[in-house]
Amino acid sequence: MQRSLITLIALLALVGSAIAQKTLTVWSGYPELEPFYAHVAAQFEADNPGVKVEILTQPLRDYERRLMVTLPADSAGDILEISSAFAARLVQNDLIPPLSANLEALVTGGAYADFYIENASFDGTVYGVPLFRGQGALFYNTAMFEAAGLAGPPTTMDEYVEYANILTQRDASGEPTVSGWSLRLGGGGSGIAEKFWTIMHQYGGSIVTQQADGTWAADYANDAGYETLKLYVDLVNKDRVVTPELTGDAQGFQLGTTAMFIRESWVIGDIAAKAPDLPYATAVLPRGTISLPVNLYVTSSDPLASTFVEYVMRSENLRWLLANVGWLPNRQDVDYADIIAATPGLDGFINIPADQVLFTVPPIEPIDEIQTRMAEHLVRAFTDRNLVDNEAGIRAVLQTAANETNDILRRAGLR
Image (cartoon, rainbow, N blue to C red; front, side):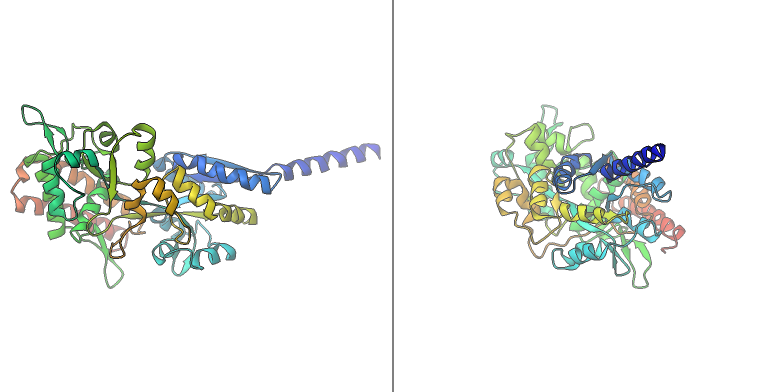
């Protein structure tokens, strides 16, 4: 009897230990967000003794590959942070469940614009809670603009080209030492296509467009695509305001080797850490910009997982996210005015005019392949001097790439 009692006590101790060590796992493809989740986890753990929140972050592409393996095996985290475009294929393959009733009410109760609700839903059912977005804006060096006699940022695409030429600084041989406008000319395939897409959007173009019958088609072997690729070809080969060798993008902006470039809001925090004295401002693009929503998806049936998401979405935590990380929260019922006042660079991202047209990567399964294959054609074209003043050649490049895009869509049953 004494031995049975000891065994019972040991079993109860094990059960109690298991309860005390209950764990929720949060997975993210943005390592810079780990401090944010840790900030929320500290609040959650204080209010829920015995619950531990574990945070796993890794580079985005590695993370997406991890999801493709763990979700079918039912071994993914309890709360998953996923972009709406990538999540679409997971939702459509029944790998992610719909939201609980309380989280669905949070999403549809007026806290979010329709754009973000639609990108967190599928066939009228809400699957994700909109958290933040990657959104483009122009970063420009105000000291360089002033020195060049430019009173403010460009507001038309003609002005972008004009300003790029005015702002470029050259050595004695005529080679640029400071790029007037840094363009993405290499690197990851989908990133090249997205940056091209953002500029093409100013001309009214898109990489793919959904047709009236629900199918999809390439939409860049046209005037919008031509104007965009011509811009790249001219600025690289004819005007020589940007070269593949010149340090550009965020690093070049911080080093002073480019006067302006288009990028997401994370650059603001990067500048604060690496070049705090850099004189710069941000501005909206002429027509509008890309907005890539990232949502939280709950795979666990444990109500605590949904409760943690509610903690994440508290206004004070979203304000912390904006102030300390720089990604743009998607809740529209939170006051960010004082944070914007303290960090003026956010103005071009938060205070966008009502007539700005946002677009996003469509939630179709082959979009990554489409962008990667398209980028291969673009990279070759960007530095091809034979395309200077060669409209037929530029249009042929775009038509070849568009044919490949349509083949990929057809193979996926979308064309």
